[in-house]
Image 1 (tube, rainbow, N blue to C red):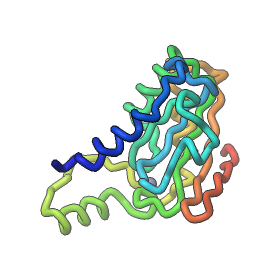
Image 2: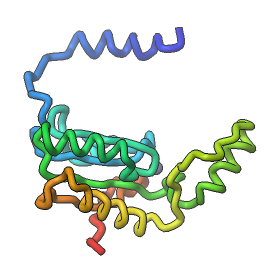
Image 3: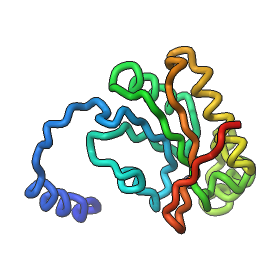
Length: 165
Ligand SMILES: [Zn+2]
């Protein structure tokens, strides 16, 4: 079957698995919003373990309504007091426009994605600042929530703090 490799791996995983007993709250009071890029390992990147942080991912690490939905729950119910927003270098969502992405999808797959907002940007830092502002403006999040912007370098592994605007 198409998922057999994963089920095989899980059999090995669960043979070694021990329930650490950590609760569903974030032990390090942290939420991380990062990209779906498969080169990013959010826990390893930040020295975290399972139980430490809420990890939210979407293409481009953008503060969408759904990312806010998860943040509102994480902050108000699950012990989160600080948020890292972590887009990355060499991101497909950060060097093109939505129009270009729609054209690529159409060319490669013949699929018309008109009407979909992919939130691509050609100014990644401006988008990051806008997204951090969006978290700050959310009335369902506390004003003392700590929000940091970072850029992850997928080639060096470095996490580069982005100064607030
Ligand atoms: Zn990306």
